[in-house]
Image 1 (cartoon, helix red, strand yellow):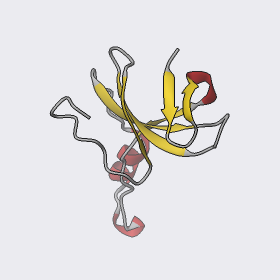
Image 2 (cartoon, rainbow, N blue to C red; image 1 turned 30 degrees about the horizontal axis):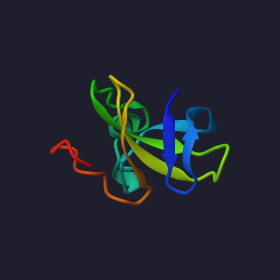
Image 3 (cartoon, rainbow, N blue to C red; image 1 turned 90 degrees about the vertical axis):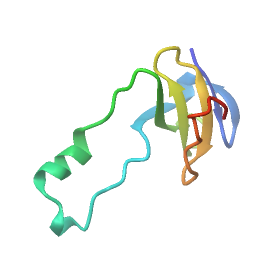
Image 4 (cartoon, helix red, strand yellow; image 1 turned 30 degrees about the vertical axis):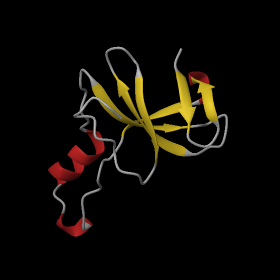
Length: 96
């Protein structure tokens, strides 16, 4: 089980959270200029990396706030937790 550090509530067990999938996805627009293919990609196409993945999580059994997590899909290690609206951490140097 993961121990996730909620930015508002502190460390909690994974069962209190819901993963919302890949984070930092930008909605295409304006709507009248977006092709069906591009809209379909926005709705359904997600990356599935082996390594660090940026995800959205919701603290469903706590503060009900969304936040972002940088997590390794190989080891499930949580590398960084940061609030919605904050920039993703620079993970290229290996230090967060």
